Image 1 (cartoon, rainbow, N blue to C red):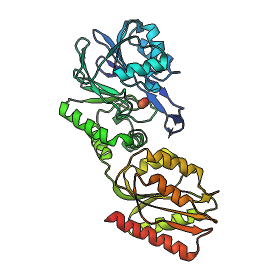
Image 2: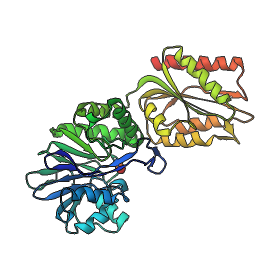
Image 3: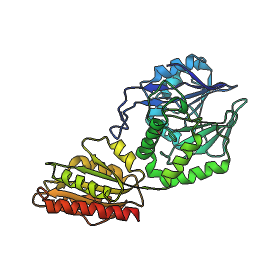
Length: 394
Ligand code: FEO
């Protein structure tokens, strides 16, 4: 890779992680890889915005060097301390030890804890402006979107919003801009990113979008720290964020299940048939065969969520158990659900699922069958799906 010009004096100098498949531990399967974007501004004071993940320092250093010697960096801005953005900071600081670092006070504390250093740190918050020559950089607090330290940086001169995690997508690419990639694939990754990382912060995001609107920023580019830079589809992604953050839903249903001997699966398929009979879209997800981020992404704006599990040793099956605990973190609102499953002699799984999700969805009566569903029981599954679809429509 090399430095890529965003506009006069502003370069993208980050790294591409083509082979990353398990981001955030195993919480996010990144089928298209990941980028760690970092931006270099050439002005009277040379400024680096964010770094990259540890292990990619060489890429970052080489990319910066293709524009300017690192010893000339005057300022480093840390919009967010998570290690995918701050991991290279210790190595970078060795090459520009006199650089001043700007970030929130929470970021300073976090950097100290992670790396045992924080250099010449200046703590900033919303309203703080930093003049670097022709440009003045403004900082906007983004606390808890999605970490306590988060902030974003705006350059009015360039009309660029350096948004860090916000508006990101996990999409390894040698291209830079949103209009250089298939639009549907781009939005698919943006939705997956929102649903798997930002969904729990819907309320704060709604408030922050309103704050940003009031600031009346003139934005020609949104430069996130993952994926493509937005320049053509800025209003589209802003509208999508407002929509996702509002807990809005479509009349469609996700049926998510795990099965031992296909009995729970038979129930799931019949429930889907019942839903479809009322003209409502439903998607069937066996949690052992689909990637969790894909299911979560579909569920982001699906009004109906139906869950099924066989009972094993008096417990819910393990993969859907982990799935539901992850989903619970979404703090979703306004969903309708019911739970189903087959069992041999005790059947605790259904109750266990209900207990797990009762905070984030309203529950309709459950369906349980012993061993394999009979024709009569399958008919009940169909009717349950049909009746659920009617409730979704209303
Ligand atoms: Fe991309 Fe919160 O780190």
